[in-house]
Image (tube, rainbow, N blue to C red; front, side, top):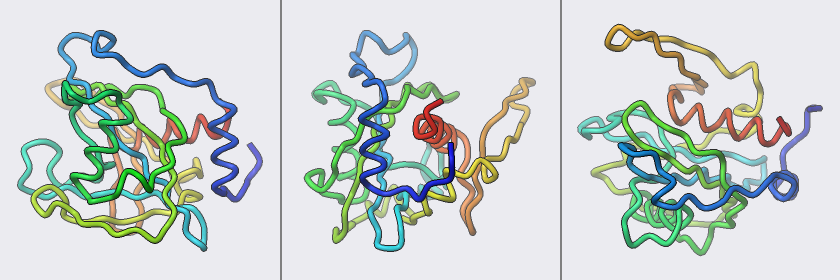
Length: 196
């Protein structure tokens, strides 16, 4: 893919040209995995598109201190993964779901910690107010989409866990280490936008 400066309209076209993924029904989630959804919030800034991330607080049981997208477990009353992502985002960072233009879904991402995650990509135009849940969110920050789309910024790392060598993506940005499931979902976004 030739280098382009991503714009909101370019993103809409890329998602319009991609195959629509069906909503994941409860039965489609593999046994033993917990269904979840996250929002990949793309912010339409005057200087260019950015992606919003949260850094989880250090005391949490799951993924403490890690960089993530806002989101969480799907509740039985949630109508769809999109509903879950928007509800959880509002609970975590206070972003009004009415300000999110949902562009589409990325492929399901299965985590080593037992989640089947549906990433929902949404476009958000400022101004908006955020009110992070102090228990869950230590920090909110944004990273330029152009940085995330550049394959030169996609690192491969490996770690041995329980005698098994596991590989993962990482995209360090300034003082933040974006890695694991979050980086894996970003690689899926990059592949979709490149038409792979």
